Length: 240
Image (tube, rainbow, N blue to C red):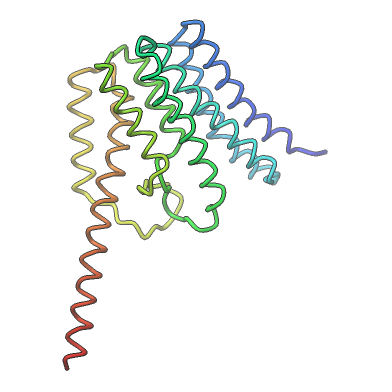
């Protein structure tokens, strides 16, 4: 019996609840829309594990996963943010929200193309994080200043297509995890949670997002220092 339908069914569940989130946003049921995104995230967590457990991994599952992820973690969060808090801005808000959805699609396509090259880290912000922070923000009941929300949407869209590294917890990585970045983000999480306890989940996601930026910056500075030192050493050897 072909068992691939089981894993593909889990993946389709991801897309189903992503689509339901979009419809709930249109209907004005924003908390339900946010919960649907979280359910999609759970399905996304289990679909690959189900396929590997049943030995049914294949190209169909990979393509289906990417399409469902864009629905659930690109289009659905963009629709939810626009419908719940940004509608009054019209096109000014619609464009950043559309960029969020398109950036998610680009991120997923790049991940599929470079899956054999990138190991030990995620290149760019993982798409599920977009869904998680959006859902956590909506469910917290906190309402940010709308221009700040738009700026954060553009930041997240950029980070998905960027070369910022995020830990994937799947094995050894050449990236060093810097304790300074970790401590800063833990303090940030604590402060934000203290100021708005209901925002703890969104604050945790934001801390993770900022950690990737800071840690990547520190790793790149370290690599630059090594290159400069190597060039100096090479120059010294030539003089000798």
